[in-house]
Image (cartoon, rainbow, N blue to C red; front, side, top):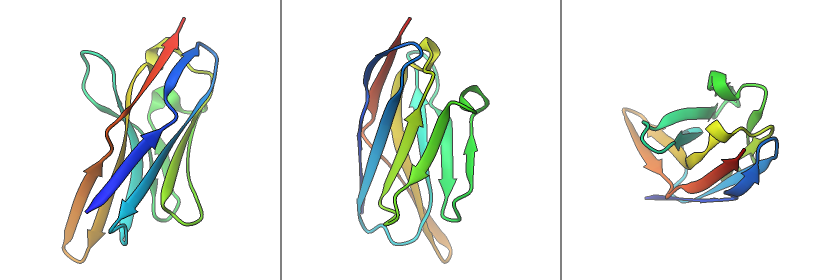
Length: 119
């Protein structure tokens, strides 16, 4: 079992910055990806940024150049640095990880953290 705990959300004015953290604990051997998703009211959950075990990253077009995903040296915590925030970045941000082995994979989600960007 893997537990993901997010922190760092809050209310910020447009143009401001926030840094989200996601700490993973439990059976975290074999992490293949760690990612951030978000869900705005009335919309589907969407991928914001993803980081592979090989440190390759990818971003949604809407956040490229503004958001940066990173991971600590121990590999247990993933961060999302969000700069130049816009009102459309408002939503609940979820941490996600995929853990895989030979012939199997499992997905885990955090409980989410609210980000609100005021205009």
